[in-house]
Length: 258
Ligand SMILES: Cc1ncc(COP(=O)(O)O)c(C=O)c1O
Image (cartoon, rainbow, N blue to C red; front, side, top):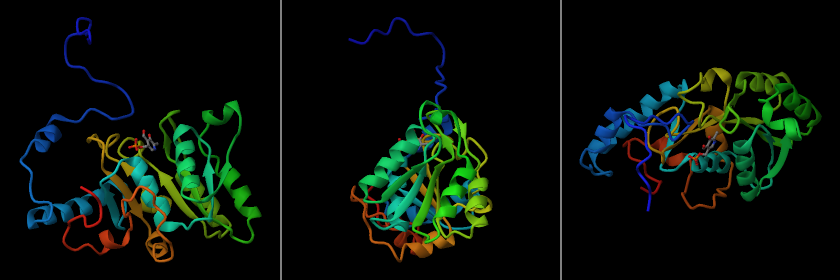
């Protein structure tokens, strides 16, 4: 039996990167009666949310909202812009970079790890010059994407995303830039459009201070165009294709399980 006699009195505020405490006004909103997720009220609300979320990512482009955790949104990003066998660089910064890379491998991508190796590798953020050096050697443009974690929750190290974009552009390399900002968004500065991310992945339970279970992909025009070229390789069966939500006019999430 759980012993409850040693808790400090007063309101507890757990200082961890997430799931973060949900503000009382959000908790109150969650207690409202359910509305029809296929009805017009939900549709109007959906459109408002899809528009409002752009401000948080600082983007003018569409943001996809999934009924999924950050891991599901990782997958949504990979399967929509890449094909099995595509070569993808994952920068080693910590546990979440590792998990994302493992998912990429599982999905059939040809994964290559860059960054510092050994004991020291988790003490640093992304060094854009390492990515630049690797892409310079890729004269045949085999590398289709570069994946970096903006805020590596396992170490607390935040990386300079704009510098990575600059490195890619300085070589005129066509690789897409995929950024995990699951714990960065809403906590640290994040500028999807200005920094030139092609897909930014995030989740609800950290900087946004919501319960877990909502995942996001902010897109770029190149990411949207890419979805026409890719074969869906997702394995958790969420049918995560960008196409329908982008075309969505009713504001209802058409594809995701609810
Ligand atoms: C940086 C980062 N990426 C991805 C994830 C995975 O998100 P989730 O646990 O919502 O699947 C986390 C979760 O802590 C994270 O901190």
